[in-house]
Amino acid sequence: MKQMKIAIAGKGGVGKTFVSATLARLLARDGYSVLAVDADPNLNLGYSLGLEDEESNKIIPLTDNEILIKEKTGMSPEESLGNIFNMNPKVNDIVDRFAVDAPDNVKLLVMGTVKGGGTGCMCGANALLRVLLQHMLIQRGEVLVMDMVAGLEHLGRGTARRMDAMIVVVEPRMKSVDTVRRILKMAEEIEVKTLLAVGNKVMRDKDEAFINEKMDELGVPVISLIPYDQSVADADMEGIPTIDYAPKASAVKAVKGLEELLVECYKP
Image 1 (cartoon, rainbow, N blue to C red):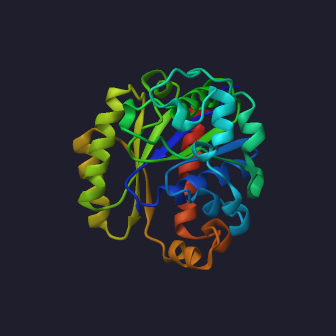
Image 2 (cartoon, rainbow, N blue to C red):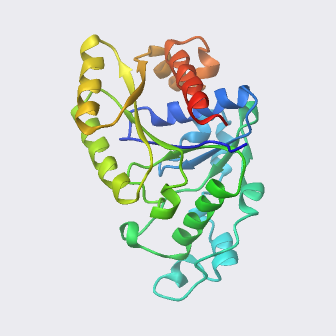
């Protein structure tokens, strides 16, 4: 049966990595084979999933793995700029070689992010990421949860159509809404099929109303509202995933509700 593919984006600091990590682990606990992909330049998904600091610090993002890039494209990142390189590298072994085991049997792959002159930049590292993402979306059978940068640099038009849904995490702040507006414009350009919103850090009825109103104006359905939960901040201070630090926390329960909704919609 088809496995769902979800990308989670949003302004830095809105809590998208918390949502990504908690969602991945809840899906894995429910018996799904889950591949969590860190495509954010801050590279925090490993910590949020529960990897030890020492293990997380050993991981080299694929975009920084010059040996791998040269192996797959025929040139180092520096050599490939302005030169002819293999734009369709073989990538079907990368997940098995480089994904690491995280708690609850989640597999973590740290991709890194597209670098260089915007989405039009095409060096060997960027070509490798794009082909790898297509492979994960089309040929691999796991549930895919991708924590990604707000700019959507990884996704080309053909790739984006393969994503079941892109979830934008938004907090009750106008700057967060402005980021959703930019994501929406880019998502339209690359033909993302489904864009959904998750409100986070909701403290008051006014926060909920703000998120619902602004997303309605943008035409983005709000499918979940996650309350502000001090346990999330406390868990971060302790260096422990919220799902382990406070498994009954209201924020974790809200992500559980999100997981159940996604499973019902996309039936992995």
